Length: 109
Image (tube, rainbow, N blue to C red):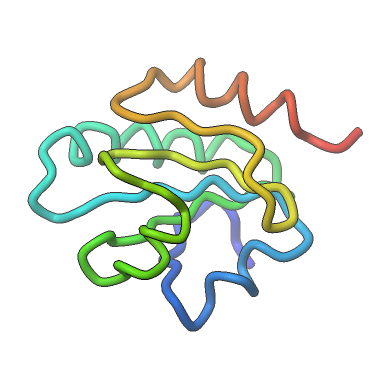
């Protein structure tokens, strides 16, 4: 899997993508203007993070069950998972350095 690209997660692949790795999931919607502002930041994060970190997007309108299961009530929400377990969460717009700092805290040595 090329982790420099942002992948799409949904119900069929969600658990598989999260298994055994650090994954940053962007919960977003097409109509969400702040989500559109966050998108280039995620592209930069995907390009700068190590190969063992995956950046993924989940459309909340198309994946209501996963959105509810993940307790996402506002978008954009970024959730960092380590082997399927949530370890960090950011709601609203956040700067790249804030998100990368959070990712770095959870990188395995």
